[in-house]
Length: 200
Image 1 (tube, rainbow, N blue to C red):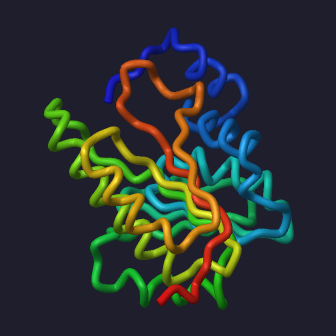
Image 2 (image 1 turned 135 degrees about the vertical axis):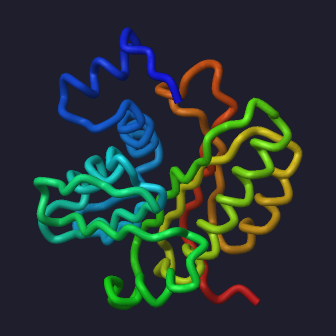
């Protein structure tokens, strides 16, 4: 992905010490929806280069913890409340690996998982829904009751199918495009609050 070095959020991220402009998407989501609380345990899927983990780390504080997971390597953080796991979301060892780091259940699952876009709108939307489904499967396994889940999707015909899949599990579901989203991007985020684990 190419970056515009004159972009407002790119320059702001450099100035404020964030690893990527995407930090501001999560900051804006948090300001609007209040999904992360002090002392929370957060699982950040597709975390590289680590900007969402940086933001989450500040919100959870010293008594909370962030698990940053990605197939790509992530540079170590200065914060001592972030744990880095390098693994593929499709790995058969994913749950076994996460179980080593997650005691009980967690409060928030974040997913900024994405693949490189192909330029084919329909194909890219389908791929992104697949990643959102992977993220939701992980959220089902690890979220506490009343926990929160945020995932990236691309606008497309299968968004409604995905929402129908997750709707029984959450008290509130909202679609939102943070102002920091690039205008040319088809992405938006689904913010899911008040998880219910006992869905039949």
